[in-house]
Image 1 (cartoon, rainbow, N blue to C red):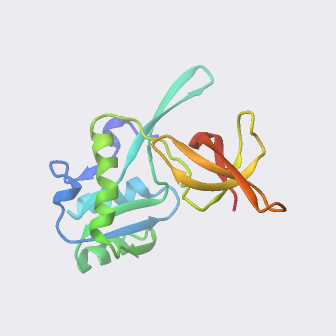
Image 2: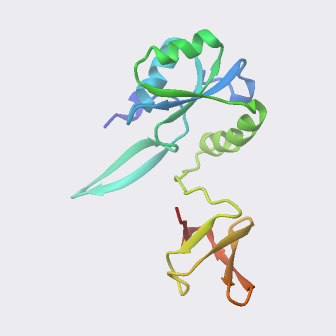
Length: 183
């Protein structure tokens, strides 16, 4: 476990926002538990990166442990040119580099995460649930029920409960933490 000062910065260079980064964005899929080492390597080579991390507090026996963990396990976002991409691959800590086809969309999706982290908010990983996905209710009075997600609101989703034999369906609003996707 690293001391707080031994963790890499979330955004490098620290005085810039990811919206100000120049170059092409890529997503590095790192080898297991190598996100911070890759971040330090990128900083050492002056390659711009974004590694969203959040504090996790856990209790082990009689002591409390605080760990700064990546929000997206095994992924780090970096921006640069083709030479920078090759330098990232040379770290030998990368499984693959994923090209980003819609650069502006990625930055638009990452900016709220950056803003939340820099304002001191704690982020927690959450399963990605999308409209049209089949889900199962894992808590509450509907536990065990399966349905289809048709709408996403601010906090709640709409889960369709179908009776196929009748060709009819009904729906219920449900919190996103009460469901999990069905593979």
